[in-house]
Image (cartoon, rainbow, N blue to C red; front, side, top):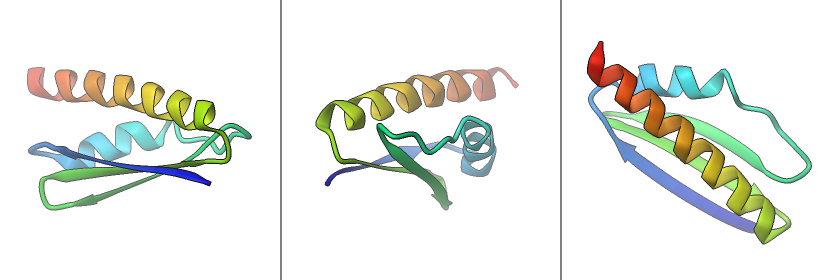
Length: 74
């Protein structure tokens, strides 16, 4: 099993996590959980295949980047 944990610092982690949770789906390729702590969004990925882990990380990092950019404009 391959695993990856990413912590993203931001001002409003609950808002970013809520935006990302709308896209959470457990697929055969990877699993993801999203949580928060003060000023941090935590993304935890797991996959049996390294390619699945990479797919999950790439997808959610792009979504998180977009959510962070939109929240700065708000």
